[in-house]
Length: 115
Image (spheres, rainbow, N blue to C red):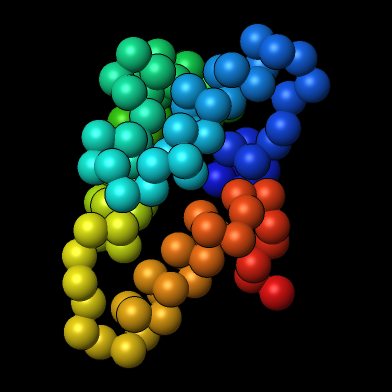
């Protein structure tokens, strides 16, 4: 999702401004702990929309297992992202992951660094 949604570049001024508010500001200030996740004013309506989407496409008795798993997966992603930005890792694999992520921030947000 990050690659395709957060790095999509809108063509109009309103879209560009919204993009900056939702994700661009994080790339401009990657060390700011308050700019690592979407604000609740965005994430709560977005989670609600995902709930109704899943409710519409999944069998009725699956939603109560799938949706909490989806939210937990998102929380794991956000906690991991916070750790990558703010923890000092000792293990080589974590250092490599952090280096790769920081290159994403400083080489340019639109570059594909996963080749």
